[in-house]
Length: 105
Image 1 (cartoon, one colour):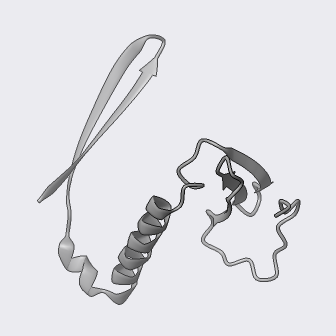
Image 2: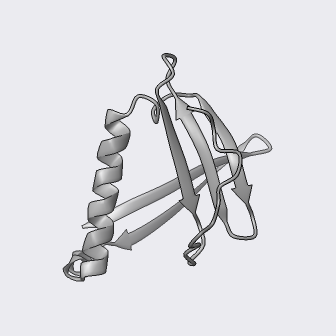
Image 3: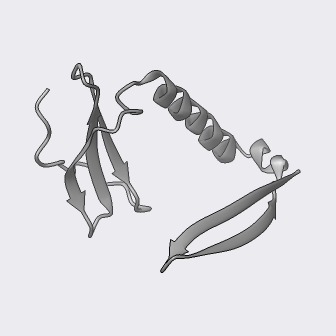
């Protein structure tokens, strides 16, 4: 089975296409870490589908730390149901880290 990734972008009015073909190695799912990551992604996708706030256009970034590669934002619905998302893009764990400017409930 092959997965096709096609990237489109517009630069100065010109559209460029890059096509990359990668074969998926499904045997990697035998590894516990890989299987766990797949299961986590499935749960996150399911959560996003059930959350109107995560699917709304409303977003406010309230925390960025470029040195530690940490980022936080909130999303909400028109009737004010809120979800806060905190992301760690580094390979490090940040035990005891405090996210500043936490949004009001």
